[in-house]
Length: 88
Image 1 (cartoon, one colour):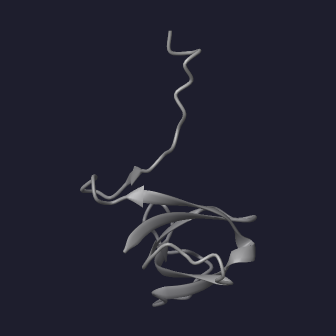
Image 2 (tube, one colour; image 1 turned 90 degrees about the vertical axis):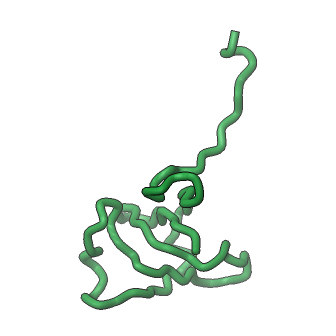
């Protein structure tokens, strides 16, 4: 299970879990345990809902959280490029 931050158009990002990385041919993403970044319930989802199918056309991008290295599971995987011009 992978913990992700889902950024959607015209709404705040939220945290959820996905089983695997999505297939590019999918038209929606299966998200489990959706919640706000502070852990509270999403106001747009009914009480008791544990899994949602979110359409890809509403998703701007997804961030993967590194749950292996951080016991709290909140370390963000980031990719950066070391610019040799600034490292002098």
